[in-house]
Length: 278
Length: 278
Image (tube, rainbow over all chains, first blue to last red; front, side):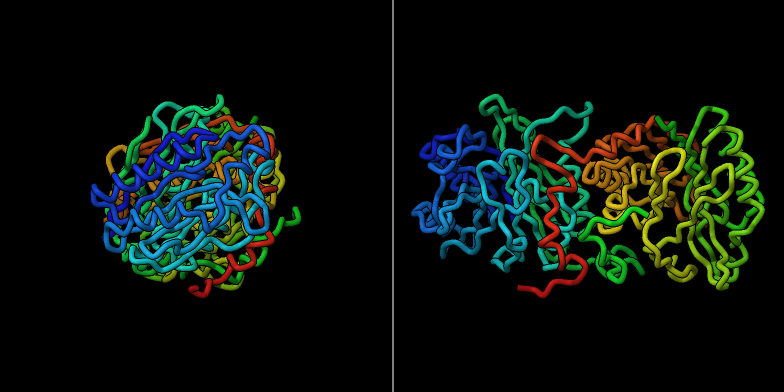
């Protein structure tokens, strides 16, 4: 059983030192409370609403930054524990990426660069071009993607087909109006993604208002059955969930129904391209 | 604007005459109440829980059955009106299909054969092998698929990419336990499908208990924004919704974000096949 903590933070754009301190406190606090897997939001280190490319670039962190060793040191306090943190990445190619890292006691296990950039992120970041990160860890086989990536079922399916048992999704969901009593729309998508793929989904969102942009506070842990285990709601806080990766391994839906086996791969050749109108 | 009526019925397995009478009454009633598009459940004519292949086959209807002309006559009462009805289809190849037809005043506009058969349906039906039906009609460009098909995002994406403005989904959703206050799980999937593809989704479900199988009563009309317009709940009844097909045509999500344009088709080649574990 994996004890998951999804931490909802309110990073401040431009305040790298303050954001790093908040990330450190969030990771330590969750580990002390028993977390095996701590997930922090997208762009935890930099904040989100940049005013210029110069500002964004100045907030980038390279992969050999000492912050990763620091996070590795933090998670070493608990055997097998992992932290997942979203950060603005200064690439070795001098480009800026919207990235997230999985960090264990031994250091960085993997980094994913967001492939589907949302709206004005396109002004600041270069999109990634690698598949969703899916790797075996002490906490099961983890998949990693970021925010808007979750809204492309081709992408989440790829992670599921690669064997992801827990899909980890650091996010920054801007707040949009929704009907009274409804969940954040992206959480609905996360629930459907979990159920369709029989794969747990963990979303760590941000909260607060940054340069006039309000955030959803949609941090939610979803089981492989598609139902919400815990969520944070407004303000900062932590959602907790116990996830058994084995629940994601059996894709049986009923005696003769199977989430993967019933896929008609003979008919999906065209799904990757626009179809001609008949 | 298309005035949609999704009708929740309780067909009786084996009672072809009674089910046809109920379908007739449902279509007429909805048209009289102002519907432009009337959607009835999957297997409205036959019922669902068959005890043998012989029973299922005896309930099949060929495409040249006079019932289609009768439904065409009914919808001719209202200019441009359409009825969508699920039925067990006796194929010209002597096989049985789980099908649905779109019927206008001039007759059958198209028939779709369910591709993803759920569980024991595999004992009775032959799966279809054609793409989701997507056709231009007086009520906009309609997509048509059936029940479990909706749970394969490859399939719903294909319909959306083919230009479906309203995805019509006759269903028979067996009732499964769900947490207090939650919607039927398949409705969650319908909401995510609508939002991801910016496409209205209309699900007409059945209700009641048939040979020990209880049904969900999940009839729901969902707008292209992913939010529920109307649903029926328990028992028979009609969900109503006014849908503007134009809302499904513009796939813009934000100034620089687009539901289709942001797809990374350069990276999805592998989505149709199982991925090797890295």
